[in-house]
Length: 352
Image 1 (cartoon, rainbow, N blue to C red):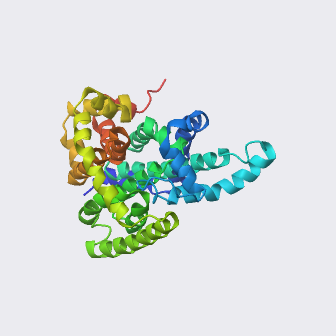
Image 2 (cartoon, rainbow, N blue to C red; image 1 turned 30 degrees about the horizontal axis):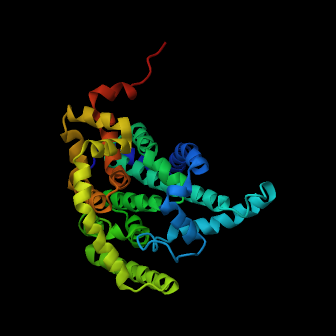
Image 3 (cartoon, rainbow, N blue to C red; image 1 turned 60 degrees about the vertical axis):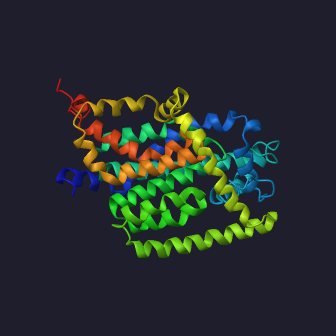
């Protein structure tokens, strides 16, 4: 049960004007830093970005099976690119027939989606008992990560998968059935590794929907995902068993990922996810952990294990580690709210 003070803080986060303000702040934090990435990134060495640009153009042949079925973000970006292209034709005619309109569309879509994930993370912080200023600082810490800049500025689909994790964590915290249904419907299309999040949902998101209802929604979402996969496979002439072989190949990453995780380079990669914002958590370790561990409860710890599985199977420790943003933000905001060293942040200014 939340304390009366925490309940009051939660009610603040539910007012739509304040939510809109937080969302605009999230967009502002992302848009400026990601714009440089969008303009200056060298696509010549990035197979991922070239693949998603091809998918947005409706070209699936030649796209790796690892990325081929992640269609929502490329599809939305393609829809946004059409009006952008009309503007380009009037202002920069030389760019209208290039990838620039599509790249701009990805930048816009990913920024808006990632800001939506940030808004859900902010609300999860409030539900855990953090003060609104601390929750805002946690939001800034998450959205200024190098992976946020990378995700928002480039033709990638990671923004949607972070939104899925943010929806899952928020649904478990708030009991929101709508958030959980959105998570289930988007998850299989965001990334295939959503399957590792499903057991967590079935157990910890029961306040939002009972597990039989969750299974019904998962079955419906899985059927849609299978239909999309079948259609794409028919376009490229790929055998159905190719997906299974690709999934099993990821198991080979385990030994490599473990060696990397336990190395100095791996430690640096983990530190780079949130950078010097980790130091706030170190300060929390010297304080009573009960004040921020109890609100986090078992669901947060198990979600970190789900993220760890993603990291080990992908081999991309930093990029997958960024999925832990909801848990990091809650701990970060609670330390800022309750640690004596940060009380001056919330103190009323002295009268002159």
